[in-house]
Length: 193
Image (cartoon, rainbow, N blue to C red; front, side, top):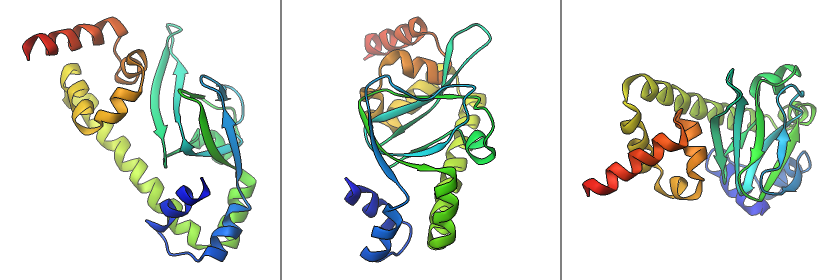
């Protein structure tokens, strides 16, 4: 599985096998069961998670007591509560597995040491965070400019494998729908084809 991480890193930075072996010393490989919480809202987020196999989601409980999914992470994506991880304050979000998952974890302290010992990783994380920020900007635009139906169909077009993999109630939560409303949209789209 570490070969997946090495190949991922090499898309963004140039490192030797020796450097990669050193980088891996800062990470721990962990396996989590389906629907296992890696972080609960209110806890301090101690780790950054790189998904090697499986699927994670980030969510919070809204004022109505309903889970609101804000992000997903599948293979080669990172997930953490950035604010809590960086500042070591209580998290605003929970992180949970959607499927049985194998992840690389790195603590905040280890990540800081990694960046000091391997400055090339600064470049890697800068690129990753820039891409994540750009994706969030696009999502905000979609929320404000697309109808709910268009937002759903855009997601299907851009990420068909992902949409097939994620339970529909979580897709609904991510899009800000009720599962019933998503079911209506899906029925209407199949009756029109």
